[in-house]
Amino acid sequence: MAVIRISGPEAITIGNSVFKSIKNKDLSKQKTHTLHLGHIMDDTKTLDEVLVSIFKGPNSYTGENTIEISCHGSTYIQQQIIQLLLRTGCRMADPGEFTLRAFLNGKLDLSQAEAVADLISSDNAASHQIAMQQMRGGFSNEIAKLREELLNFASLIELELDFAEEDVEFADRTQFHELLNRIEFVLKRLIDSFAVGNVIKNGIPVAIVGEPNVGKSTLLNALLNEERAIVSEIAGTTRDTIEDELVIGGIGFRFIDTAGIRETQDVVESIGIRKTFEKIEQSQVVLYLFESLKFKVQSSEYIVEIEKVKNQFPLKPLVVVINKTELLTDDEVVGIKNQLEPLNVILEMISAKENIGIEELKDKLLSFVNTGALRNNETIVTNTRHYDSLLKALEEVIKVKYGLETNLPSDLMAIDIKDALYHFGMITGQVTNDELLGNIFANFCIGK
Image (cartoon, rainbow, N blue to C red; front, side, top):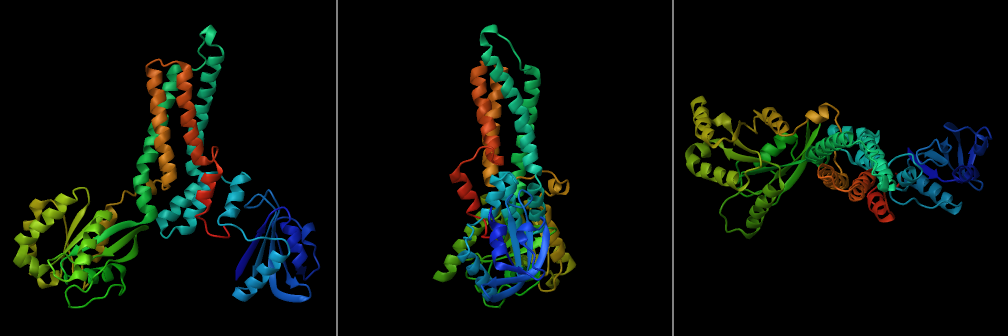
């Protein structure tokens, strides 16, 4: 099945001109939110049997008259109906135009409109949950409330300017200071949430690093539960990076299997090794994989390598993964753990081939993500544009707060308040321009 949507003042009239109801109904005389069975007719030629849904403005997604034609899914049928509608007075929608019209007609604010695109692109439970919460207005309601309270005080400050000669204060400075403290606290919480929101929205990149032929590709296949990477006994098989995604506990992880780190004369493999370091730089978590028997023999050399990575990337969680542990005795396992303990690294003992320790490794990866705010259904910022506006709003609020504490004249303080209100308005669309709207809606898919 396919759905063809028409929105605009003449939508129902145009729909009626190509639709023949099985009960001879006139669509223009039907009630809103009703379904009608019939045929799409090109003059005397029947194109398809369809269901037509009627939504009369303002009670529609766009706020305008809208009809939706549910036809059969054949590409040929869809194209025939679309070409007929184009000849009858319709035009193709621009990317995101339906949601843009919904915004312009006051059905959604700008942050809710952007959440529609996030909802469409969400590919795990966490990003879906955040997009739904934002689309329902959770984020914009919080911002709108702060903006309204600040606007009330701004009005009182402006009123004081009108009575400057009488030296009258309408705005209670103590209450104003409390409000600024509360706004600052909320803004900082929202800004801090972006760190979590960004990784939830885009997935957490995890680099799998190690010497050739230690089982990186086998580990990737075990994590993904499918044969995604090529596995062979020949060292240096993975000459480029392989990326795939896995959802653990509702959070997306992007696993990057990289070329092994070793000295080599092979030009192609050297390029792969250079990319390994680039991928470590881009990742948020590093899995450093070692083969158990080799580690037992070359532990001192490998410990130096671990310390190098740890020192070069001190802020990245480093998980040392010892693979093929089925080849070790219990005493040898204890010995390896004792050797690595002074390094203060996270250690996981696994067998990728036998699927031992894989679930524990997944749990460890999930522990690196702060999902507390998500579980508590708190507002989480995922949009870079919102993050930037929040930072600028916070900067202006801090200026207002400083001006209040230093008895800055009201006219100067009013300027900073207006700037803060401007950045709040940029988030929800109370302040906007054509260039901003063009940039936002250009990223939407056509038809939404």
